[in-house]
Image 1 (cartoon, rainbow, N blue to C red):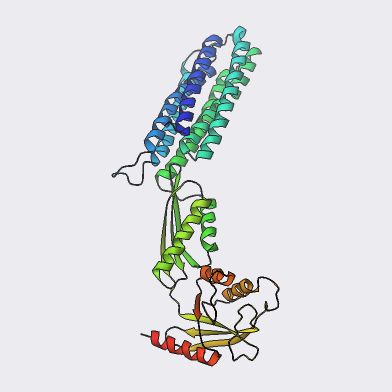
Image 2: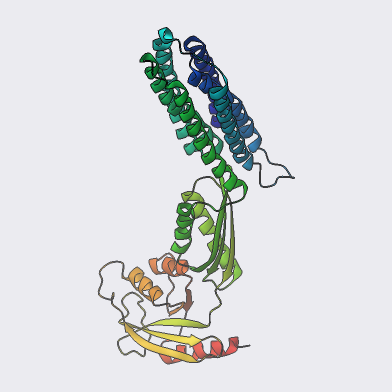
Length: 399
């Protein structure tokens, strides 16, 4: 089945053939060297449009020899398109300075009317192709649309030269030279863009910044060591090296998959995402325990606990680095206090919570799960017993 890109490629060929015929007829009728040059320009457009269509068809294919696809064929086609533009410029220069032409003023009104019609056709199609190319994400269609648009710009200059011919002003050759400059400028822009992709230049800053924001938004991501991206045709390849707050590789893998899904949902035309991840190596761990007003006994109610015991323990040797009794600022809240307390503890760097009751299906459970916090159920009723367990477990984990 023919794709939208292939259909637009065929439309482009048809439009360019029509423009060559129209401009060629107007050039013969009026004797305008600028119109002859522009007809040559449009003739190269036909060839480049055929090349664009061929590139679109080839770029869809994958094989064992090209496991990453042939997407860059589209960028190579864009590069060839720029060379056709340079060829058109050369032919125009040669025509301006070598071929003898004399304007036939009696036919100039017809030439001007025909040129206005050509401009209207060019503007309508280039606008349509550019919009479709950006929507689809096809660099070859975007390049072809910009190429076609140079026809409209050059036609404006040629029209001015024809108007000058009505008043015996020698503007025709000057108009042809201006056309050459426009043609070369358009070709240079397309050449540079295509060459950057073929050499694996980085993705644009806006896209990379968007990906960076998505990664850092995940509460389990501690840091981004590196972020890279490149284009290949309309597709994007993204690679990231991140540190994840997780106890093991299995949990870190789950987080990386979640990040990948978020990137694919937000960034268009992503072919592959490669995330290198490693669990965070903790030098310390921070424990939180809900307490009653006496600051000795465990509170049965997490959200309304008057205060929390928060302690930081060094992983290497089980040394208690700091401890504090933090007053619960959300104990008096009417709604959502469990979630607010969870987020408050998360902001304090807590990575382990002891509680007499679990949080399955509840707000704090989701907050702690997303934040990489370990929730440990305890049957102990007082703080001293849990403190003993914390130090004992830490000692057991020492090498």
